Length: 148
Image (tube, rainbow, N blue to C red; front, side, top):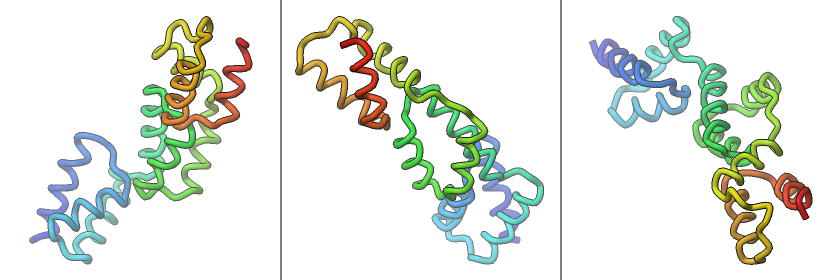
């Protein structure tokens, strides 16, 4: 009986967006479903390919790239969502992303005239902005060296 409730709840969630297995487990635990019910529902969803961590990882990666986030931030968020490192590495290998170009696009969106900026405090602000978005120090310094 409760398996039907748990399955209905998970299908309602998955109808809105993809979730990782870990996220679904947490949501089901928060609703006080038993461990056996959670296992059964997740196994059913995975068997019918309603829930797939690889697909979730691909969608999440592309959505974060479109929002201008760097590799470090995306990796951190994926780990928080329970994505295994092997799945993440596979997804990154499938989607060849030029992180330098993405950093440049992200910076020019927030600071359209960043190339003409000479003030050190503003440059530090731009550096912190990119770093907080998850870009590596190497990508950021290469971006700044490009126009200095």
